[in-house]
Image (tube, rainbow, N blue to C red):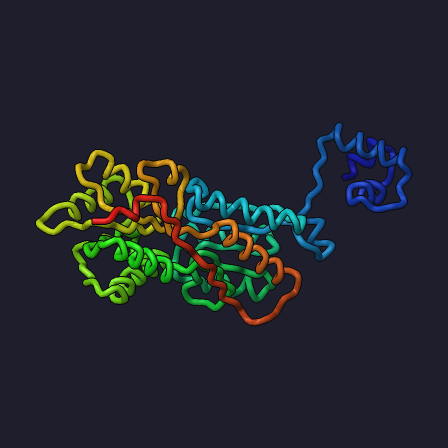
Length: 327
């Protein structure tokens, strides 16, 4: 800043006033300061300025599983829209479903003094956030709850959605229904499996463990599961995909199959409505998930000190054809 002052022929205080948009600086003087700033490539230190003022840093942190997944891309955009309306920027990082990476990113964002933190948790241990929360950094968990602390949480109705998927298939005559889910260590995967079990009970069909596969979805794991479900004298006639990634791998595995089971996917995905047949889905508003979590976070930033909240957003079945194929 002293270099800028020297080049512009003004005091350091005058440079500070121009940089911080303070009044009482003559326009000609301000113009000289701005020209000196551009010539020297000066950039103000926002972190230092905000520490001196005791104000916000103008940023929030968002930790997701994978920014490359369309689900999380849409979530990120929704959070950004709310953040922008509050004059904030969003710092985003991918945990890769690794709890150590989640912790590293979260603490790095806190070290950068973000005004608040949104986390799609990869692990079950979140005690590391307690000192940050006590120091005044609000934290909201979304899509999955925290493992071992009480904090604001925004979820979707995983249980009810999967129950509806089972009921829908049963209404179309299916009784041998398979469920292909993600790793059972993931909250959403476990809840959707629980919904599948409950749906079987409610609809009077047996829960058959041989028709269930819970593992990280890859072309190989899903392909192997599909071959297993199609084998034997009594194969599955319908399948529920536990998330959009499972559904995509499942569709690839079935692309050249002689007999294709009825299909319902939990989570919509791009082009699902253009396939043949179009894919029936349990849909939820990803933007609403991001909006609700971000709005809750900004309420905390603005001083809301009420008890931690749990918000569960609704889901709905979109019938498009793949889940309506009767026996």
